[in-house]
Length: 308
Image 1 (cartoon, rainbow, N blue to C red):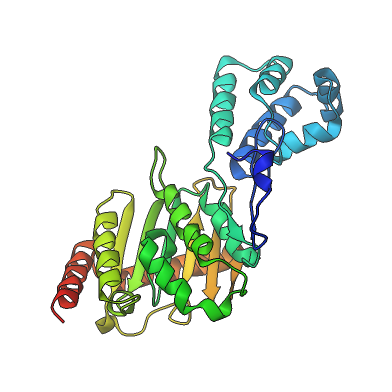
Image 2: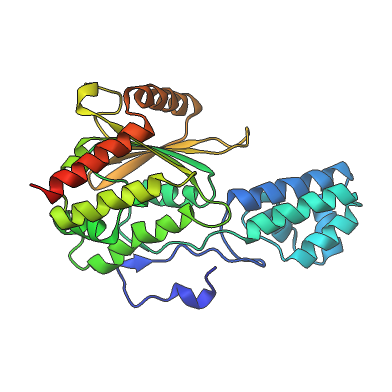
């Protein structure tokens, strides 16, 4: 996690999304779950927030931030509150697990100041969400891009970015996001990718071969499912733009959908709209090749690049 000194950046075209602990940070779902659990214990015990704050010798506003998930209290504070609320052993274990989850969040990612708010929401959401589903029309999604491929895309789209933006720093964004795919609790990723994305030579034959080879490696992980939508499938939903569905297991946490378009994007979290995109994804998945046949197609494309 970043400390306060990490806020300072010599590149004015970038900003940090900072997430601290021990009384500092930003609102996250993991902190929110802990805060709600502690608030439920307090209310069950018939204690007001003001009284709890008084016993804790802190401001009521601090208690509000703890319970809303805006701030993660240090563990000693949580332990004191558990004593105050006369929590049972099972409840203490639940609180301990919730606190560990809130404290063990992935580091924040450095994003350009010009990054659209909707994309920022996507990046922040994928730090905590267990599942993402993508439909990609023309390029490999950022979570599966090689550095050379990402650099070639940025070079090609340079006219859409501020002139002072450093490409090396922008390329680091998708690479940093890929850390979410590894570790003890990796993101589950399901990608439906149009065949056009593996046919178009982004960066030239060498770059494309490397990218396709990486797709084969990535698709071998248990947490990653890759399906190619073949040209022969004809028309399918979402052909007007790529989309990302971010899912959460908790029933009280609304999934979100990121819709991508040139130089921007939109975030949708209306339950009915999200349900429509989810249904569409399932329908497109039926039109796509199986993971095994998708890998076969990628292998054929690699051979075609090796023998033009």
